[in-house]
Every structure is written in C-alpha cells, then in structure tokens.
Image (tube, rainbow, N blue to C red):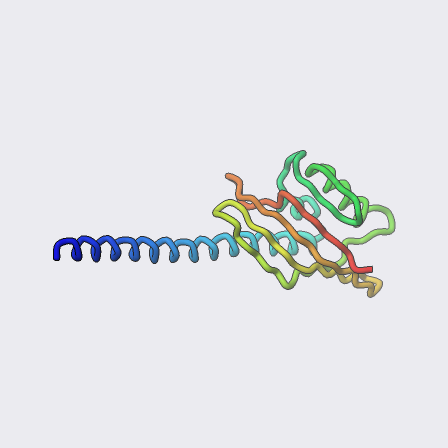
Length: 155
C-alpha cells in the first residue's frame, strides 16, 4: 500500500510540474509573439512616417545582420540602411505606404522567433509593389531585433 501511495504521489507531482511547464510555455509563446508583432507594427508606423532610421531600429545594429532580397545579399545594419535609402529614398524614389499582413510568428525559444508574412506598398502613382518575407528575430537586452531578413517581391 505504501508503494502505491509513493507512486501516486510521484505521478501527481510529475503531472503538476508538466501542466505548470505547459502553461508557462503557452504564456511564453504569447509573450514572444506579442513582442515581435509590436516590433513589426512599430516598423510599419515608422515607414509610413517616412522615418527610415526609426524603421531600422527594428533591425540588429550589427555587421552580422543579413538581408537577402532580389538574389542579393546585404551584410550589416549599415548595408541594409543604405540599400533601403537607394531603393526608397534616392532621386525619383518614394517610400509609399507600407502594410504588413498574414503574419505567422513562431517562437523557437524564449529568445528567438521565426516570422513569415506579406508586405504591401501603396505608391502615390497607384502602383502596389508587394511580396513575401521571412525574418529571424532574436531577443537582446534592448529588445527584440531582426537578425535575418529574406524578402521577395512579386514580379
């Protein structure tokens, strides 16, 4: 009888621990998803104010940042900023109005997340460039940052 009580007590402890861990995992996933989505919404708002530096605050300010687009690899935060300037802020270019949609945010751990989504620009001439992106986010002491961006445009 005593062995049954010990076994029951052990099983109850394991089930309680497992339930508690699962609940924390769910809360953690929600926390990660909310934080990452907030970065993207902040970027979208910054873009629509034509504030490229504020938009870039969502990226890891490091030479190790990677950005893939149009069969080109851009390395580093400064390189990504210069690419955005050439593409959207140089003579005859405009930023338009940005909308992110169909976001799928998958927490990979407490400190990393994988994101899939769509981007859509509306330009003053009525053109609507759009495409898909995948992002890798990492949590740093100063918040969540994009460490890798792979963006494609529809042809």
